[in-house]
Length: 409
Image (cartoon, rainbow, N blue to C red; front, side):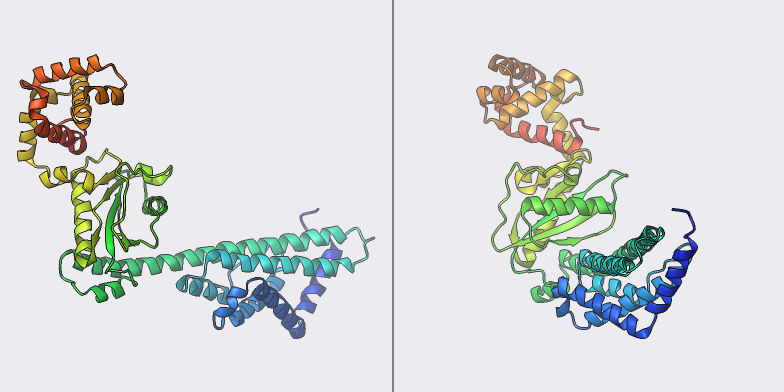
């Protein structure tokens, strides 16, 4: 097809625009298209006044499209009534997918209407196919641009809503955590109906990766909520690369000690989980447990860290006094050489296995005599038998691994 339509196509389009711009024809088009949309999306009928708004947008879209149709190139701008619908839909939680469906239904109606009109054209005319392509390309382009711009307006409105809501929630949460807001009903109301009387399990999702954005964190949060079966968790953005999450359950939330996120963005994050606690006090205490847990985990240690699984480490904390205890306890076993690291790993496995050489050997996939030999080497470096100092040694080894990434500064 030539870049410029033939004279016959241009004449047909001019007549079409003039005819369709007639008030009666315009009313008929709006009624037919709006009726089709409401029939295919009956749930829209429960939203007071939306049908009238859709009718207004159809009229405005069609008139603007007719004005642009004869032009060499479409000059598109989302009509004001459609922009209002998009913003109000974001504010009232009408899914964006439903808005896009409205446009696709209108597009189908346009296709059927223009096909019907062109079927009346003498099929012996060589320009008939050219006209069909011309109309379809213009209509498809208009619909595609409408959907793209509607999506932009919708997401912009959602961002404004989310920012405002997050600011209010963060203020409320901060007051609860600081002990300055102790009325459960008020907290629940300010947090959008979050059930404050239930048990609460607090999670903190964070990353130190510069390339990861807040969108990545929120995506990780969605995957994590799905993995844990959480329904409508409370999510607050405190700033930085971190999300605070609370899950409310009628009973303490059971959590597998070995829980790991499924394949997805959550696997690349650090996730701290507090113990499940009831009421307003539990809401705050579970969060503080998660924060303290995160505070003793080395930034390079990604994955899930449960307070219940490392309570002693969290209570011990990390400061120069603690690090001195680690140095004294480990002695030469705390070095950075490969054989020292290997011996520490063997000792940790042996202690975790309750002092069973056979279980440690099975876990490390080595012969039990290898475990015995390494334990003798470790005892020589420590200056004492491994079994005689198992409690202190277990804490020291775990602190070195979890908090310092295997090497004291």
